[in-house]
Length: 134
Image: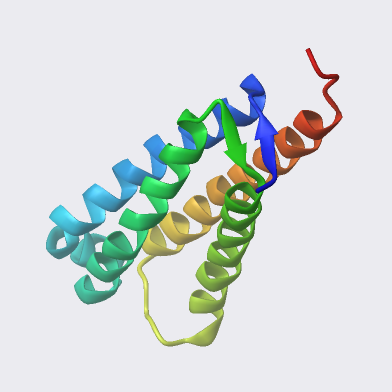
């Protein structure tokens, strides 16, 4: 199995992603009802999204805690983050939901943050690959 040697930038990006995504997932699961009213998004969608994020958070936290992160896991995390951005923006464009202004801001804002994590992880992956062996 191909592994990426420990590199603090990549590990930091993964762990920051795990913490932020974990907090978002917890909030979505616990407060789906109140958030639904504020955001104009169905509580089932919010709760479901939060539950879907749980295994992702575990994968990201595990990968970030390794001395050598499996390259396949890091590549999957980057791809899943990119897919989340596309799905989030696609949800808004689809007309399937009728979010409030705050709901639009929330969906777009979290998509930008997730896209930022993907970019940081991509940069960290590339830097880790070019690091000289110790």
